[in-house]
Picture 1 (cartoon, rainbow, N blue to C red):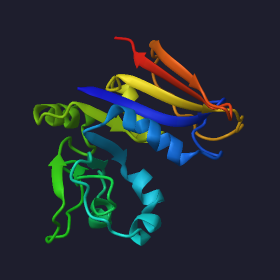
Picture 2: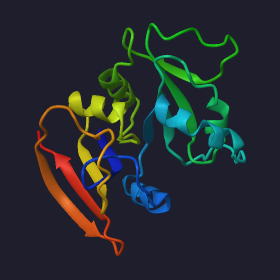
Picture 3: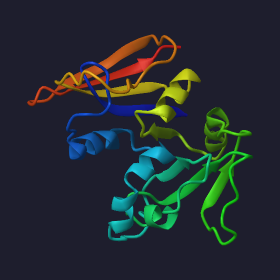
Picture 4: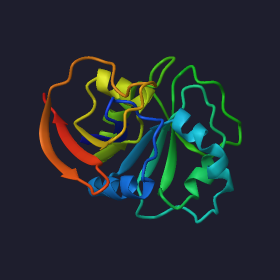
Length: 199
Protein backbone atom coordinates (compact mmCIF):
# COMPACT_ATOMS: atom_id res chain seq x y z
CA UNK A 1 0.00 0.00 0.00
CA UNK A 2 1.17 3.54 -0.79
CA UNK A 3 0.15 6.35 1.60
CA UNK A 4 0.62 9.90 0.35
CA UNK A 5 -0.06 13.22 2.06
CA UNK A 6 -0.45 16.38 0.01
CA UNK A 7 -0.73 19.71 1.76
CA UNK A 8 -0.45 23.42 1.11
CA UNK A 9 2.06 25.25 3.32
CA UNK A 10 3.68 28.66 3.65
CA UNK A 11 7.44 29.16 3.41
CA UNK A 12 7.58 29.14 7.21
CA UNK A 13 5.75 25.80 7.46
CA UNK A 14 2.26 26.93 8.44
CA UNK A 15 -0.74 25.29 6.79
CA UNK A 16 -3.25 28.13 7.22
CA UNK A 17 -3.50 31.91 7.01
CA UNK A 18 -3.04 32.24 3.23
CA UNK A 19 -5.08 31.67 0.08
CA UNK A 20 -4.84 28.31 -1.65
CA UNK A 21 -5.95 27.59 -5.21
CA UNK A 22 -8.16 24.62 -4.30
CA UNK A 23 -8.86 23.76 -7.94
CA UNK A 24 -5.11 23.31 -8.54
CA UNK A 25 -4.65 21.50 -5.21
CA UNK A 26 -7.27 18.86 -5.98
CA UNK A 27 -6.32 18.62 -9.68
CA UNK A 28 -2.80 17.69 -8.59
CA UNK A 29 -4.19 15.24 -6.04
CA UNK A 30 -5.77 13.22 -8.86
CA UNK A 31 -2.25 12.12 -9.84
CA UNK A 32 -2.41 9.34 -7.24
CA UNK A 33 -5.88 8.08 -8.19
CA UNK A 34 -6.37 7.08 -4.56
CA UNK A 35 -8.61 4.24 -3.51
CA UNK A 36 -9.22 5.90 -0.13
CA UNK A 37 -9.22 9.53 1.00
CA UNK A 38 -8.32 9.56 4.71
CA UNK A 39 -9.44 12.65 6.60
CA UNK A 40 -9.96 13.71 10.21
CA UNK A 41 -13.29 14.77 11.68
CA UNK A 42 -11.96 18.30 12.34
CA UNK A 43 -11.44 18.85 8.60
CA UNK A 44 -15.02 17.82 7.85
CA UNK A 45 -16.48 19.77 10.78
CA UNK A 46 -14.72 22.94 9.57
CA UNK A 47 -16.66 22.59 6.28
CA UNK A 48 -19.87 21.08 7.63
CA UNK A 49 -22.15 24.00 6.70
CA UNK A 50 -20.86 23.89 3.10
CA UNK A 51 -21.28 20.11 2.99
CA UNK A 52 -24.88 20.37 4.18
CA UNK A 53 -25.69 23.19 1.73
CA UNK A 54 -24.12 21.50 -1.31
CA UNK A 55 -26.42 19.91 -3.90
CA UNK A 56 -26.54 16.15 -3.55
CA UNK A 57 -25.21 14.61 -6.75
CA UNK A 58 -25.06 11.11 -5.29
CA UNK A 59 -22.07 8.83 -4.80
CA UNK A 60 -19.50 8.65 -7.61
CA UNK A 61 -19.28 5.00 -8.59
CA UNK A 62 -15.63 5.21 -9.64
CA UNK A 63 -14.60 7.58 -6.84
CA UNK A 64 -12.45 6.74 -3.84
CA UNK A 65 -13.84 5.73 -0.47
CA UNK A 66 -13.91 8.57 2.09
CA UNK A 67 -12.65 7.29 5.46
CA UNK A 68 -13.12 9.72 8.36
CA UNK A 69 -11.33 9.38 11.71
CA UNK A 70 -14.05 10.28 14.21
CA UNK A 71 -13.09 8.84 17.62
CA UNK A 72 -15.65 11.01 19.43
CA UNK A 73 -18.54 10.44 16.97
CA UNK A 74 -18.96 14.15 16.30
CA UNK A 75 -20.01 13.94 12.64
CA UNK A 76 -23.65 13.87 11.68
CA UNK A 77 -23.42 14.73 7.96
CA UNK A 78 -22.51 11.24 6.67
CA UNK A 79 -25.23 11.01 4.02
CA UNK A 80 -24.42 14.52 2.77
CA UNK A 81 -20.74 13.57 2.45
CA UNK A 82 -21.66 10.41 0.55
CA UNK A 83 -23.85 12.39 -1.84
CA UNK A 84 -21.35 15.17 -2.65
CA UNK A 85 -20.35 13.36 -5.82
CA UNK A 86 -16.63 12.98 -5.01
CA UNK A 87 -16.57 9.62 -3.23
CA UNK A 88 -18.07 6.20 -3.84
CA UNK A 89 -19.01 5.79 -0.18
CA UNK A 90 -18.05 6.85 3.34
CA UNK A 91 -16.50 4.84 6.16
CA UNK A 92 -16.59 5.98 9.79
CA UNK A 93 -13.39 5.15 11.68
CA UNK A 94 -14.19 4.69 15.36
CA UNK A 95 -12.47 3.35 18.50
CA UNK A 96 -13.85 0.97 21.13
CA UNK A 97 -14.64 3.91 23.43
CA UNK A 98 -16.32 6.05 20.76
CA UNK A 99 -19.72 7.23 22.04
CA UNK A 100 -22.71 5.21 20.88
CA UNK A 101 -24.07 6.05 17.45
CA UNK A 102 -27.76 6.50 16.70
CA UNK A 103 -29.48 3.11 16.46
CA UNK A 104 -30.64 3.90 12.92
CA UNK A 105 -27.14 4.82 11.67
CA UNK A 106 -26.45 3.35 8.24
CA UNK A 107 -22.85 4.48 7.76
CA UNK A 108 -20.33 1.66 7.47
CA UNK A 109 -17.93 1.52 10.43
CA UNK A 110 -14.46 0.22 11.15
CA UNK A 111 -13.61 0.06 14.86
CA UNK A 112 -9.93 -0.09 15.88
CA UNK A 113 -8.03 0.98 18.99
CA UNK A 114 -9.34 1.56 22.51
CA UNK A 115 -9.85 5.31 23.07
CA UNK A 116 -8.36 6.48 19.77
CA UNK A 117 -8.55 5.08 16.29
CA UNK A 118 -5.54 2.83 15.64
CA UNK A 119 -4.33 4.29 12.35
CA UNK A 120 -1.81 1.53 11.66
CA UNK A 121 -4.54 -1.09 12.09
CA UNK A 122 -6.89 0.90 9.85
CA UNK A 123 -4.31 0.85 7.06
CA UNK A 124 -3.62 -2.86 7.63
CA UNK A 125 -7.34 -3.68 7.36
CA UNK A 126 -7.71 -1.54 4.23
CA UNK A 127 -4.67 -3.25 2.71
CA UNK A 128 -6.21 -6.68 3.36
CA UNK A 129 -9.31 -5.43 1.55
CA UNK A 130 -7.25 -4.70 -1.57
CA UNK A 131 -6.71 -0.96 -1.11
CA UNK A 132 -3.51 0.13 -2.88
CA UNK A 133 -3.36 3.93 -2.49
CA UNK A 134 -4.47 6.14 0.41
CA UNK A 135 -4.28 9.93 0.25
CA UNK A 136 -4.23 11.67 3.62
CA UNK A 137 -6.15 14.95 3.29
CA UNK A 138 -4.95 16.72 6.44
CA UNK A 139 -2.40 19.26 7.56
CA UNK A 140 -3.20 18.91 11.26
CA UNK A 141 -3.40 16.27 13.95
CA UNK A 142 -4.15 13.36 11.60
CA UNK A 143 -1.12 14.07 9.42
CA UNK A 144 1.15 14.53 12.43
CA UNK A 145 -0.08 11.24 13.92
CA UNK A 146 0.53 9.41 10.64
CA UNK A 147 4.04 10.88 10.38
CA UNK A 148 4.85 10.02 13.99
CA UNK A 149 3.75 6.43 13.41
CA UNK A 150 5.78 6.15 10.20
CA UNK A 151 2.70 5.55 8.05
CA UNK A 152 3.41 8.10 5.30
CA UNK A 153 5.31 6.96 2.19
CA UNK A 154 5.21 10.20 0.20
CA UNK A 155 4.82 13.91 0.95
CA UNK A 156 3.69 16.41 -1.66
CA UNK A 157 4.01 20.02 -0.53
CA UNK A 158 2.48 22.97 -2.33
CA UNK A 159 4.79 25.63 -0.90
CA UNK A 160 3.30 29.13 -1.19
CA UNK A 161 5.46 32.27 -1.42
CA UNK A 162 4.24 33.78 1.83
CA UNK A 163 5.47 34.03 5.41
CA UNK A 164 2.54 33.69 7.79
CA UNK A 165 4.55 34.37 10.94
CA UNK A 166 2.35 32.49 13.37
CA UNK A 167 0.12 29.48 13.44
CA UNK A 168 0.32 25.74 13.79
CA UNK A 169 3.20 24.08 11.96
CA UNK A 170 2.30 21.04 9.89
CA UNK A 171 5.20 18.95 11.21
CA UNK A 172 6.39 18.74 14.80
CA UNK A 173 7.18 15.07 15.19
CA UNK A 174 10.30 12.99 14.80
CA UNK A 175 13.03 13.59 12.24
CA UNK A 176 12.18 12.37 8.75
CA UNK A 177 14.73 11.68 6.04
CA UNK A 178 13.25 12.41 2.64
CA UNK A 179 14.24 11.56 -0.94
CA UNK A 180 13.40 14.22 -3.53
CA UNK A 181 11.14 12.93 -6.31
CA UNK A 182 10.41 16.11 -8.21
CA UNK A 183 9.62 19.81 -8.12
CA UNK A 184 7.38 21.89 -10.34
CA UNK A 185 7.27 25.69 -10.24
CA UNK A 186 4.03 27.48 -11.09
CA UNK A 187 3.82 31.01 -12.52
CA UNK A 188 2.52 32.43 -9.24
CA UNK A 189 5.65 31.22 -7.43
CA UNK A 190 4.05 28.17 -5.80
CA UNK A 191 6.36 25.17 -5.67
CA UNK A 192 4.98 21.63 -5.85
CA UNK A 193 7.64 19.56 -4.12
CA UNK A 194 7.36 15.78 -3.86
CA UNK A 195 9.38 13.59 -1.52
CA UNK A 196 9.40 9.92 -0.60
CA UNK A 197 9.94 9.17 3.04
CA UNK A 198 13.23 7.27 3.38
CA UNK A 199 12.98 3.94 5.14
